[in-house]
Figure (tube, helix red, strand yellow):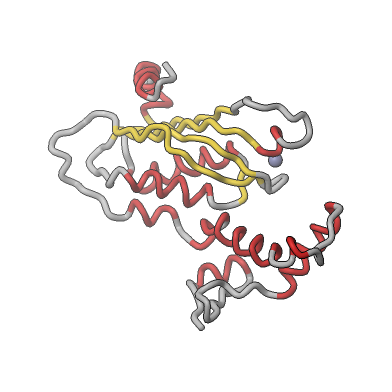
Length: 211
Ligand SMILES: [Zn+2]
């Protein structure tokens, strides 16, 4: 038995307890809620194929929403000040990610391009993806996800500029409602020089393949 981070406990109202098999023990009320949803969907939670589904769904959601247990800004706390005179844009392009929309809890699947123009500090490039996943692993709307990633980099690295462009498909559009397939939604957030200076913005969008 082993209790995970206090932040997880605080944000979710309950601590994860790990069983002998190394898996999270799913509280009975959570399993019941998923059984109710299965019944509401028109199936029988008692049928064999669905017996273990509530536990699986519960653990899957713990994983989809693991971002609540982390502070994405911490990924940017270790910076390198020696940038060797490098004063050009740093870009991580087309990072695949998955999130879930807060309106339907349906999947959002897409890619993000994240760029910043360093002032005097850079981070390991993989950290930008970690920031993205930290915010994506929560219930989201694409606009807020885009803004949160940009703001986190802006606040923590204090660069000359930040540019974040996200393109994603929303399960709540493709699988229900208007059932529109193949339509991607694009959101962007520009800060600093990319917001203020049209030629810098043009340059970073061209690097992202969106010029
Ligand atoms: Zn939705």
